[in-house]
Image (tube, rainbow, N blue to C red):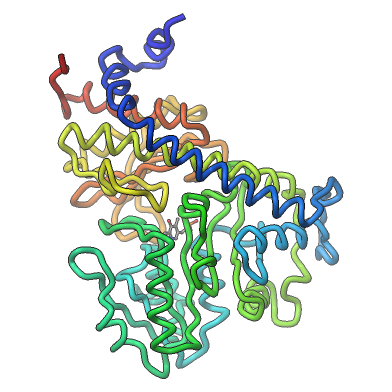
Length: 430
Ligand SMILES: *Cc1c(COP(=O)(O)O)cnc(C)c1O
């Protein structure tokens, strides 16, 4: 049985397959590094589960108020151990990453306080949470001010400007680890650590929060190992391991996480309420699988950069750079390119493979967004997906893949789609 034959039955021509194999030949040492990080993180997660005596009783469903929900409380201890923090809030009632971030910010900023982003503009959906774009219920409406220091042209931190921006009213700093939909580098945990140390040198009582979306388990350390007071993310990205059907997490200092719980439920109730609705098996098992799933996604991202850079497309990160999140941006330069790429990803999916993605005005974004995703969990971006706002430079953001083999197929299918549309070509090497 030749592997080419089964790929052909999926729609990948021999030409595209062989091109992919040539690219892969050079990637073995990097894939070995990714496997080593996954092995370390698997041990880290196992250690946290063993230390907290995870057992079958923790998988029981609770309903109603959810008082004394031991499965939920223990999962929060497991997360706190994985992230090396005092406390964690891990809940299905946190609906997505934006919600988790909004809770963390809203809980710890009071009227008159100022929030500083020292890494340029935050993720699109945070603009409305903060009030950069007018929105009902924004922090701005509640009298929370916002300041921003942009990155230097080379993508590094503008330390003198950050020092000038921090003053007596600055209460909290928000640092986004991943590039999101921006054309800037993703920061390593050690870079984030340096930035936090600098901010705290300027004002020791600053609360430093890291938007950790897409970064979990990419490195052996998390931002909470580098001085972050709060790390926040979504369970339908890396830490849910593809199994969590909803949810978000906030890990960090005990007093700050407690405030988040009061904001999420109600003052006085906090972490005591919130039934788990039968989701504990998915949350525990998803976390258990997360290091391996993240490794597969990371291999897919690196493969994509190496495939597309050779063909002359700008890739961020580029083909050789070290990785600090699972997102791969490929600048396709045209609307048609974005559509063809996304069509190929969609064709590779286990679910909804027969539909064509079309751009739509998605809530929270200021341009039409195209999304290719054929996921078991709707909108899950740890599953193989590609999306992006349809605006110059027409960059598609590719991420996920619950297994490396699926990520590989997705990239080959995207290339096939661009080739079939006449948007790309190459000369065979001898
Ligand atoms: C995905 C993401 C968010 C928002 O998460 P949603 O679950 O889509 O609301 C915030 N910040 C970054 C960097 C992200 O990647």
